[in-house]
Length: 371
Image (cartoon, rainbow, N blue to C red):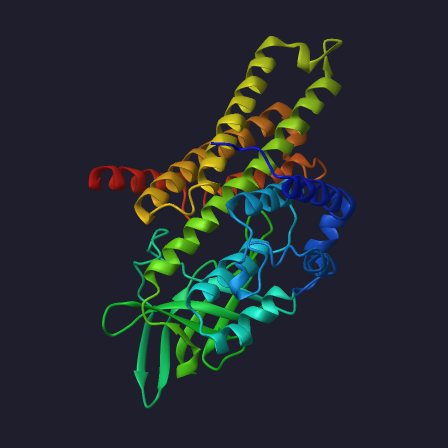
């Protein structure tokens, strides 16, 4: 298989590299994190460059980008720790809309999303489900020509900035439904917070939330949801590669600069070995991320097996690189002034987004037994 990038993809890499370098310096990133929720100047730049349209098919108004294009974008965002909710606020909810929504629903929610006019959020996690998107207790009942939703969703990324949430709920027939819940809908309440790596998130409570029938996107969303979560996991692997690259580069630069006993730390053989181990984990993870990105079009069982294997391996590598980077920086690595800190936090949290290593190793085991 030829993994070489096309001319257009190389141009995309160069454009994103310049954009992240120019607009997401450490100081600029801190200002972004302190800004109020909502679309930012950087998000508008994403729209002007076509990045919001890139991962969507031409049938829904996108540019028809594939898994490799998404990998290029996510890797660049990971290198700069870009705080914009590209995956949580655009790709995941947008792809679900593209797969399930009617033309009228797409015109109402998907078209403005691709134009950068609003962001959305996907509410799928629940307490006690342990990353299983299908083991949920939220309920949806149809009565008097309306839908009524009850339940609680945990760790909904981009919740505060979202114009609406796509919420999964169990129907009376046992199937999994998908609903659009607009921001501020009667019966909804939220608890907003930030994750360890400064990602905006929150918990969503639904108490007798009444919705019109047209707010139901699907009465059997299981297949589409599995495909979208697989896409999200592949994208996360690519984002982690970008963060791991910078963590390795920053650590090596520190070892070359810092001296002990009159010699740079980089001359000590034991520390050289640890740097080699970091780069070995990075290169093996890079291969697994490519595997995930190129497996999205495969049959579901083969796709899920390869992406689960990639997410599990990248999760373990991310934690290893984060731990080594902090230890090799010494006490400096534990301070906010040292820019390795947010990378280490993000790499540790990466393992928990859309399922941790243990969960995906179990998935690999189950799929092997079923084969």
